[in-house]
Image (cartoon, rainbow, N blue to C red; front, side, top):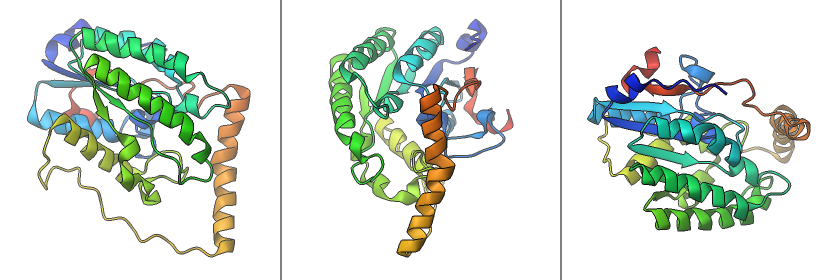
Length: 273
């Protein structure tokens, strides 16, 4: 994976926001064909709002779908440090938790070092707990792993003075209208809601005309048992089966993709890039 960072870009922006992670931060589920990789996402939306308040803010999004925690840190951390960020968001580990086996203790030792490195350089760091999947018949089995991961995240944040975005406690995400068709990634309303949540944690009060208002959600369809079975079969064929095949063959949905914004850009120009 090639990341090109230019010293000129660092000098151009006095405030620098760098987003690290996987599909959650890349923006999967929030389509926008005008943007790299065809997605927008909560991080882009956060950057845009921050730039409205600070015209000297630069933004980089190094996240790529399908990446596990060690891949995120190996490929993105040094690049992020080279960008001399003032603000960093980091969410990684969900793809590890979904694997048949995972050593969360070992992973979080590396996560701890990454947060320490970012904080030692002076960046404000926001880290995320994992989503509470207890209501999901498919992903509910990973709830215990996520709870352990979350305790590590909270402890590491406390140790290093990072800020926690407590996704686990965002009860609105139990509403499946905030999720996309694949049932794995947030929908556009879900990403907009997450942007508002992150900005709130950052301490930004949003006016009504901020542009990150969550749209009115459609009524949940009332499906018969037969219709629910057909919907589940369609989901299994179109989303679950390809996901399993990638796991078995060692491939990733992010293979061949580059980060959306590997160098700092002005968030106010994202829609025209």
